[in-house]
Image (tube, rainbow, N blue to C red; front, top):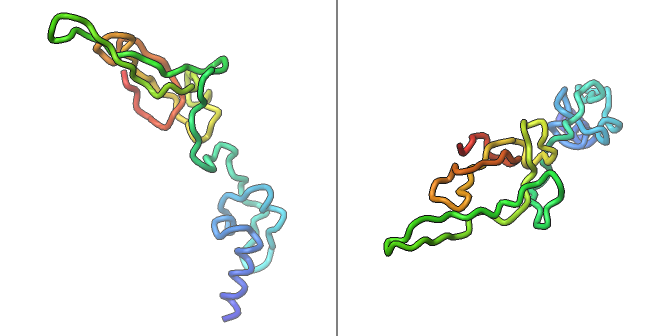
Length: 139
């Protein structure tokens, strides 16, 4: 019984169960760790600062430098011989990137190619590389 009580005290001292026993520990929890009973977190690696703590939304326009406003248009011939187009895209700002390392928002860590209709009927008439959660390029 005393082992269970001690284990719960150790977990509370480290902040959470995953923080003990060599798992990642935030610097704030590191100061609260104990060297007793296998709850020593002092030598554990700190948590990455690139952890998505909560889902985030893309920015609304106007977009700052280094961001792309995803406001595309798809178009093509109508059955009657005319031409029509419709808006495509979320109308939000996406960080432009070349590699995953350029993506500063941990909730949108992957640099991928976003295909664009650019007024046509093919989704890869143009393209831009942006940060997001997708890991596969559109084009």
